Image (cartoon, rainbow, N blue to C red):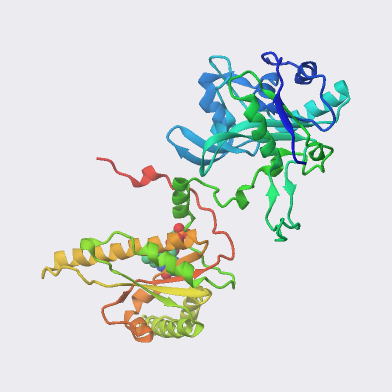
Amino acid sequence: MTSYTVRALPGLPEIAAGDDLTKLIASAEPGLVDGDILLVTSKIVSKAEGRLVAARDRESAIDAETVRVVARRGPLRIVENRQGLVMAAAGVDASNTPAGTVLLLPEDPDASARTIRDGLRETLGVEIGVIVTDTFGRPWRNGLTDVAIGAAGVRVLDDLRGGTDAHGNPLSATVVAVADELAAAGDLVKGKADGLPVAVVRGLGHLVGPQSSSEDSARAIVRSAADDMFRLGTSEAVREAVTQRRTVREFTDEPVDPDAVRRAVAAAVTAPAPHHTTPWRFVLLETATAREELLDAMRDAWIADLRRDGKSEESIAKRVRRGEVLRRAPYLVVPCLVMDGSHHYGDARRDTAEREMFVVATGAGVQNFLVALAGERLGSAWVSSTMFCPDVVRRVLRLPDHWDPMGAVAVGHAAAAPRQRPAREASDFITVR
Ligand SMILES: Cc1cc2nc3c(=O)[nH]c(=O)nc-3n(C[C@H](O)[C@H](O)[C@H](O)COP(=O)(O)O)c2cc1C
């Protein structure tokens, strides 16, 4: 197919609730033929379906149409709406609506497209395709364009995978969003303010005809949140990364990507620290031998502690079994604190405060590390054990005397999602003066 025509339909009246769109389109353009594709602005579909609400209820209308907030900047909200579309303000729109009102999107734009297609088959005896269009902004690109939000009798996606290009290269990812391309073509002649809400494309009849039920729907064009690499806005993703860090104590056998751990260390060492020091060191235990050697030595030291406490052999065995989280992990990291650059005051109060500053700064670095691991989709458990036997850890790992181990971090792919825990109310943790 090397050419097609697209033209706007003149002669449509202002649409009001209860109007029969099929009849109005049929009388505006009785010359429709088989294979034509109608591009119908969602606005007139919404109006005909009586989807007008008072403008003062706009915010609550957006709330009601929203199933998931993707991003929020001031009053602007990008959300997934009840139709499954990710768009600004859930598609609740005030343009081209009577003063004091806003318009919701059609309840089911695919069904609206089907009604028009079936109606025109009945009235004019033609087999056409129908696309209901709406105007969207896009991530990464300035400017708005029309896309398909409802479709009937048109191939919405053209799957070229398995074919080859003109040079014989295999097309392995090429699925063309035909319905969106058609919607955009229609927008070129409909315009935004010309009172031309319907366009007809002629010459692309090969795209028209009954489609399989999964393809006869503009929903097929919407990427699911699970497959979306950009599921959240940037600020939202940062916030979610923090809450996604949860202690993971059971791991799968899947190995840990050492580069991901190094990226997390790079994030860790951006933490705040006193007087421009860098108190963090990360010892990466990348071989099973290194991990076992450390864990065996720590276990022996722990058992010795418990025996000194007078614990029974039975209770010692039980405790040691409970402390197996590090053994179950495919990767271990020992974060260490170094006091390089610390001040020496010579009195206990200030020297203790100085030490505490370095300890909290190390904690900030470890938290950065854990959050960054969560961003790499790696689970972690930061446990205390190495802090109780620093000499053993230094000896086994051959670390300098002034490196203080600050626990150990088990890293791996989580075997299960962490248990939900009730949200903590910020106000419970805040005192305002
Ligand atoms: C300094 C420190 C030491 C910890 N030591 C242990 C530990 O020895 N064993 C353990 O299972 N979890 C340990 N944890 C993890 C806490 O139990 C965990 O953070 C807490 O249950 C909250 O769960 P969440 O991390 O999923 O939010 C430690 C956490 C911190 C910050």
